[in-house]
Image (cartoon, rainbow, N blue to C red):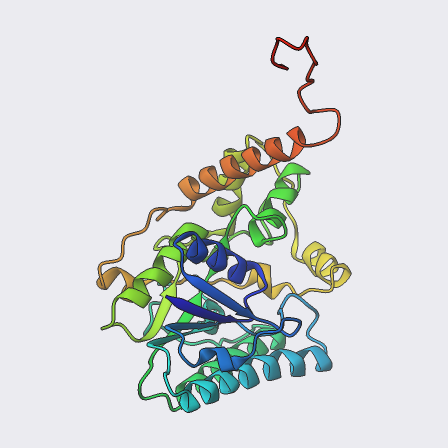
Length: 324
């Protein structure tokens, strides 16, 4: 296949590019700094639009405008490119977010769950995230692409061992003794192992009867306190300092981020994926955390072995002997 990934230069795009190129598919990443354009959509088999400014920032007026505009405008642009294509792609998978659902400690939200924005007592910045998600999906719904199947990906946090990703941040907290619960630890964390994320994308592409909204999340979200405990146990650290709400507010301000990323309770389940017959390799977080920690340890050992001074010494022997 030929796959086009607008906005594919980040964490998720890199994961998908590696996976599909390993399957010998052609992957074209479109970014602001690259030579490829949306004209590549014509003749492609699949489009996976991941474009949008990172939400890991302070929600200033300027950042809010950029976050909203980058998502809505890029979605419209992809839709227009598909609509004018002579040979439009078979399927368009559009990034969305599990943040669209309500902040809840109650029953989990499947694809028919309660959308957020009306919960009493939640910060105004959390409502902004809901507004963005709604506008993002509205732009996707409004795109007229009758020959292209459309799927909205309401993705939870994708956990991989890649440096710089969400799991890397969590693991660094654990390593430095800061991996305790955040706030009261009751807020639910929805997540998905990167291998299941890739498998879900493959599944949605291959099954031509599937369209509409899909929650891309593992079937067992869990409270933050249990989530962090599993990471500590997988890494072999028994204790992590908890972070109070005011500490998180201060840390978010210093890191130019928002506490919503940590404190909002996202309890999301993949009802439609499961109903379609998809099976998860890592349905529960403890086993996923063990696998990710093992991969990270192997990565660290491999990196250490390549440092100067850690290479095996080689001695030149006589002409009749091989070096060793």
